[in-house]
Length: 309
Image (tube, rainbow, N blue to C red; front, side, top):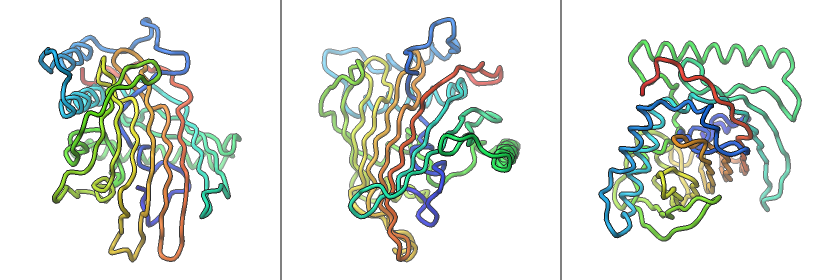
């Protein structure tokens, strides 16, 4: 689901990088209560979401489970809780040959933190080595340009997050294209989860952005926490290839991915791992990549006073 006209050398443009559900805890476990940054009104709103399904003997339906998971994710996002952390992110890009063997590997390290109320990724190292002076200055310039764009968009009353045709968020727009089936239950890292499959609805599906074409042809499975409706795991695969501009520019022939999340505290889940394999044809070139992004550390930040909630 990359932009086929120019697959990025770094991975800031890959799908999943922009999967905006925050979901998981650092290796040390949940944050001690003294360090929690959750506002009381946010917890109250979350509690309201979690009791929205009437109490009854039978299990909720797949649609009810997904609806509450989306409501939970949107509440967390709208409450600004994704801005409560800075994180270290390790990104590995593997160039693959036709047999799936690794030809070349690129390793980058990012620092992820909020800038002007929007999450920004600052490149801090390549191949385990800090950036040289010129590259470090380029990152400063990129951050300043990012901040300026955010301020300008907010001043115009627009979504402050810069536009990205490939952004994927776990929200109403995402789930409206799928039909869901509850296929079972399964523990995941000690958390009991519902297992829900998804597949595209029949008929014409929305295509508002370039990424929608790929989403409309994808199937997958969601693992959703039974105790708080947090999204714990997503596995997906494209059911058929996607052509761009009639196949003249290129074809996304296959994408397989896995997105893992962990609970950080009682109100917040954060990303843990994204693992995506891409098979793209651009003009007369075949590009096969595996992109792995792992969040290896989270540090709490004070919430700005002007955040909602």
